[in-house]
Length: 283
Image (cartoon, rainbow, N blue to C red; front, side):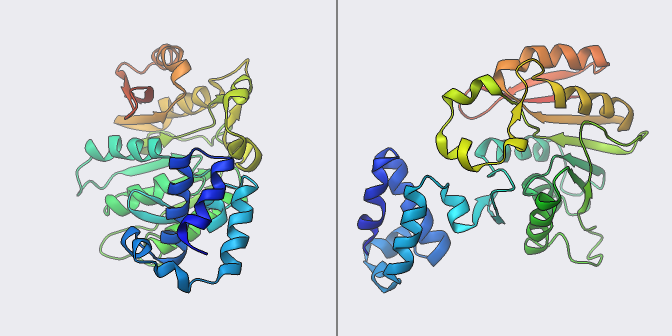
């Protein structure tokens, strides 16, 4: 099966540019073939039956990251399964916001709430090699995947290397955090923030395959997770500590008001690369 024969049928459910991108993703992530390799026809050595099976799953609407079982995030490979949300480019931007404010040699304590695949916690631990990173999730299945990603990216080794601590993963409910006083220098979270009423505008491959637990909040309480995490942060952040959120642009202003009511004096909204209000930094 040629590269074109693989991706072209996908145009029945995806725009042509996206179908072609999915094809390139499969051939690069699964078989290690670059675009130059494809131009030279090197895909002809791949098992055609395996390609047909992959193609069938894609035609059924399964996201390509789940079909392949991994994706790229901040220049690293992360394993993903349907029990965790597929990492998005916006979340890479969230990591960039934190790293832009944090020197490489910084040795503070970071908490990632709702870690999922571990993409935020692992990235921060890998980039800030002297920091201590803890990650919470309510899903035991997600924590297994997150720990695998930490091991594969060298931040869960079972030993202390060059003053670097392993990421610590804990089974915790963000809505019922433990008591803590002045424990963290940074708290970061990309919690569920899509209201049920927004489902009608979403792609079927997201609705049918990605975990609802990581996506949705009730229409009548869109700030549910932000409120709980914000309240926890008022007690758990050390003096000068910062809270970083990825947010739903629809609720940016109410979230700012809520955080100020909780006592955060310095609250700022930041846009993503598409010009949408996507991040909040509070301290």
